[in-house]
Image (tube, rainbow, N blue to C red; front, side, top):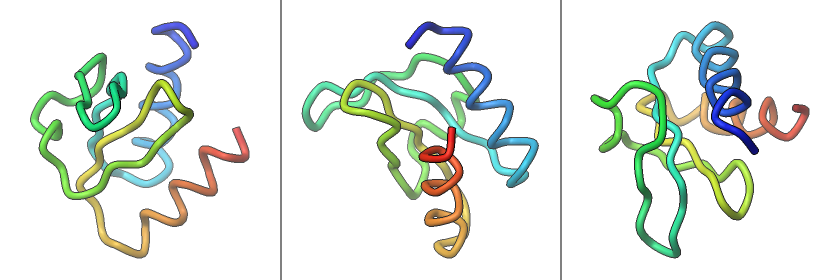
Length: 74
């Protein structure tokens, strides 16, 4: 997945769910910021996009499942 694809995911989720988020590269338990809103690197929820990338988002709990389903749909 290239940076442009990750930025598109950020923009798409931000526009659909009106949340700020950060995309990170996942190294076991460590998540390293790549793109998105830096203020949300310490957000409430971590959602894996795939085994290499994930998003950190600060949203309501009920939105987490909606965001996960949206990512899976692609």
